[in-house]
Length: 223
Image (cartoon, rainbow, N blue to C red; front, side, top):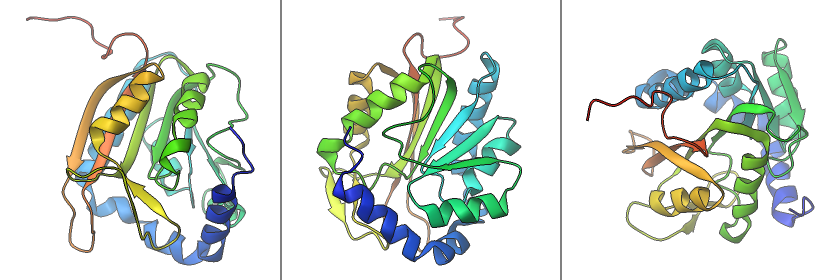
């Protein structure tokens, strides 16, 4: 992937410009989102059940989600395009590791990670440029590692751009996004759709994927 893509520079600059305001807005956002916390807990439980490996949050922003993963018992670190947001993350969570970087080019070895969280971080990627990100996710995850995606769901419509308050972003049909991941070797474990709460505009989508292999940690069956 060409990491000099204009949209990456524009997105980083847009978040740098509103870093403090954005951090204040999202810092306690999970407190009122029990369904979101539930799927994050499932992700963490599955990762913990496997061989101990670090977990990355791609597009970590001010670090609140990376800290949540830590609180769920994971060895988590975060990366983000925005130097300003990484500065806030390091200040707010000095016990965690945060790096400036792109989720399209992780500075980790093949198969190093046990889990990867992309929480509304792929939303700014133009649709034609999204498949290489899944290939990179596949590269850095160990066989059987887990990927959790959070995104804005299109509610029956096609992929469409919308006026995100920071930078241009896209809504995806959940089936289309699952198909993209599947083509790169991911197996769907589960999905969760959440209707918008007061103050939210769009349905929220969540996809839990496994990097190859079976779709659940427990392969036993009573069927």
